[in-house]
Image (cartoon, rainbow, N blue to C red; front, side):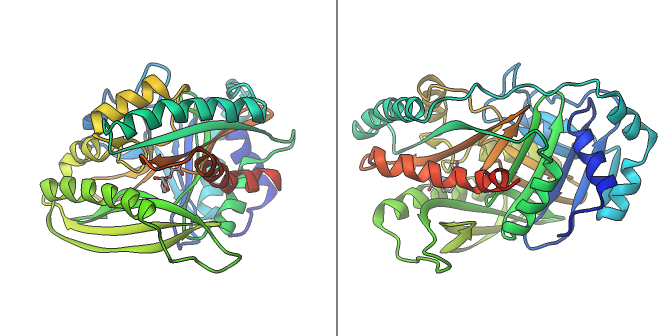
Length: 376
Ligand SMILES: C=C(O[C@H]1C=CC=C(C(=O)O)[C@@H]1O)C(=O)O
């Protein structure tokens, strides 16, 4: 994907400081950039995931809804596809006025933690997680962490977005800014729900290994297989309740940047797309980001992880019950603030997990976005 001309770049970067709400996204294996803009009023804050039933727009859902991190829907008042159309949309007076006014100042991200503090806190959280796992109170828990990274004064979100598109063709890349959620960017390999008409798709993605140079490793140990197997069992159960004619492919090895994961694809038929919110409520959060049993794991993470996940491990993307829907789990993502970005990553923990490799794995996952901002 080419970087658009400096006029468009300046407008998108300006919009990411403004009081308007927009999303820019690129689906895997396409070179087409899509733009959704809400040029008036506040973004919608649906009360809960079920309230997304029948709604259309760009969704940003947190891991856990709260006053600080509500579910957000960017109303598609203006949509555009490709830089030419996007340039025209950005030239609307609503955009240029908002960019000029700069009325909204970005929130600052979490304060930076020195590396060792981060590691010690992670190790303490790991101890809190591993104990109930070994006592068999949980089958699986996902432990995550945040870290900060300086960004240069001249950091251009659009430039980073285009570089992510070119570096990660297999992933869904997005840049979303709303005054409510702040400015987020990600490069996610995990579909939560996609489809059109009656044909729908989701995946079970879990288990991680690093790429070996440019060669994909394909020999998975039993821990990774088990980690992915329980995600697949969960998805199979939910999809079986909502959809008909489910077919399944996998698990197979799927590349995501410099990592590989185990993936199973699920295809199914949905008679009624008016209830997508109900299905999303059941799917989210899958055991790829939360744990099993689901409700207990969800509460345990809130009480024991030691920080607020915010929009990390929620879901993001385009929702349209009468057209295409492309919603992804918000992984390999960051919140962009002034002079800093906060990066997020997690990993599945089983009773036989060890702290060292799990810490390393979260670091490798964070590199997906770190590489993009370090080179800007
Ligand atoms: C929770 C994350 O990844 C999930 C998706 C793929 C592999 C995962 C794993 O191996 O633990 C996680 O379940 C993350 O990237 O923060």
